[in-house]
Amino acid sequence: MTGLTRYEFLCADDFDEDYTFACTTPPPAGSQWYTVCAKPHGNFAAWMGGVGLLGLIGISVFTTLFGVVRRGVA
Image 1 (cartoon, rainbow, N blue to C red):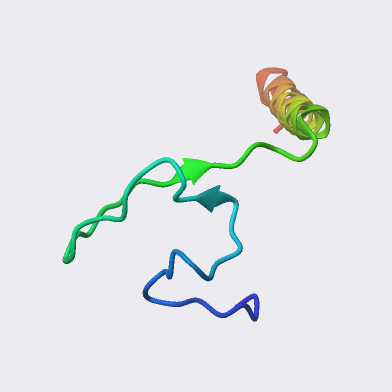
Image 2 (image 1 turned 60 degrees about the vertical axis):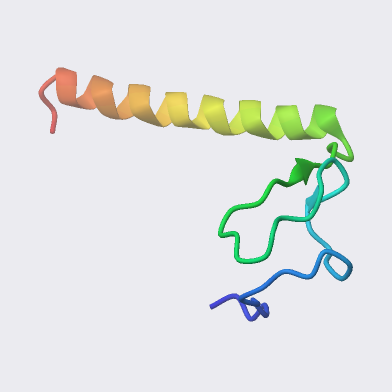
């Protein structure tokens, strides 16, 4: 849908993702689950600002819709 290529298997040596395998050993052959380690945010303040802004937008929309229903307008 997005035009990105998605692979069934992940090569630990050739990937560009927001996680790494540096904190663990490779999983045993045949495993369905494996451990990954998060990478730090490039700009934590911007990340938290975005999360906070989305939270405020959600609270505003919920409050507006709940207020309309509570007053009997809907």
